[in-house]
Image (cartoon, rainbow, N blue to C red; front, side):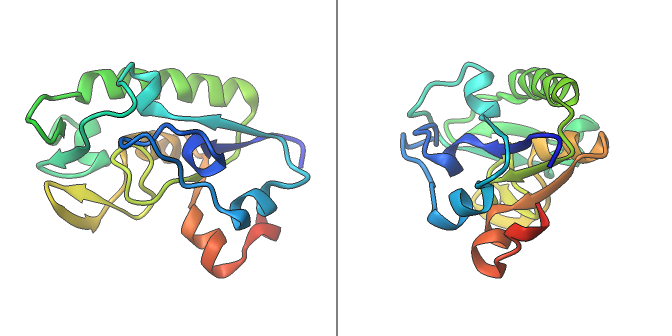
Length: 156
């Protein structure tokens, strides 16, 4: 592959999740063998600490948040939409400068969710804010669950 793959940092062992853990999995690391890859965490880029208060959407998911029709809130009620949008925009600019064409992101995350994320305490269909921006830029995004459960690592 000529261009690197963008990957949620938690999927490759970085302890950057809200609870200070990671979600590294052998299948993800195996899928990335032979590829250049760049780990990213929009929430850390936004300056949110690790560990941190969990995040969830209110009023919609990533696409609605980009239109201003939804917000991303910490579970204590503090809004973090503006800082996550700024951080995601910076990462999009970097991804484009790196020639990124594909990303493997963490399902259910309010930043990186590919097909599901949380609105309040309910898991719903929808994308995270960073994923919504990547897709709008024409960058293909797949979930780590696609790789882990369907073995599609040959399609990177």
